[in-house]
Amino acid sequence: MDAFATLLQEATQRVGETYFQLPVAGQEDPIYRERVYCYELYHQLRTLWPPDSRYSLCGEVDKMNHPLIRGNNLDDTKPDFLVHVPGRLENAVVMEVKPANARPDRIEKDLKTLTAYRRLAGYAAAYLLVYGHFDDLARGVRDVEAAHVGRGQEAEIDLSLIDLWHHEAPGSPAYSVAWDS
Image 1 (cartoon, rainbow, N blue to C red):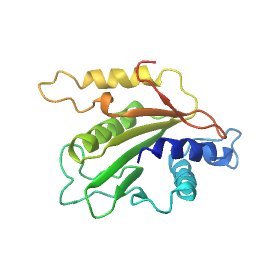
Image 2 (spheres, helix red, strand yellow):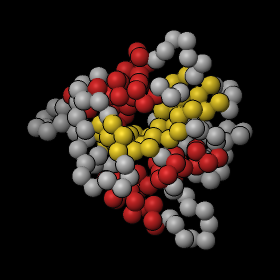
Image 3 (cartoon, rainbow, N blue to C red):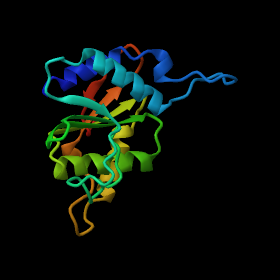
């Protein structure tokens, strides 16, 4: 699934303004709605998906009571996107999506989930895709990671296992961002 990054760039570029921030009746400013954004991104990815790929793109696959993927921040998870071969442990990509104004505890939860999927569920790549304008998100995330280091156990968050992507505006492609930027 080396081509996933290219597909992600193309698909995010196709996400329109209405799906990026949802207009609300009786309110002047549109709002971020993660699920609306994810459904449109899923649609755009599916239209670009190679028909001969052995991998499937799935959205919000519930891992509750999965016989092999359990414990260590994996129970009761529903990643926003999975790229895998259903029914087999051929796991390529796990991705969580957050709007730029997401609360730190929500980002922390997703970082724990992504780290666990890389370490324990055999996923080859993990992405945190943030959409909208952000200035200091990467620095804030590093602070969250630092809070999980040195507790006498393996850190629950390991940013070296997660690729940070930013989708800044509708009509523009997402791009990879270094955690130390």
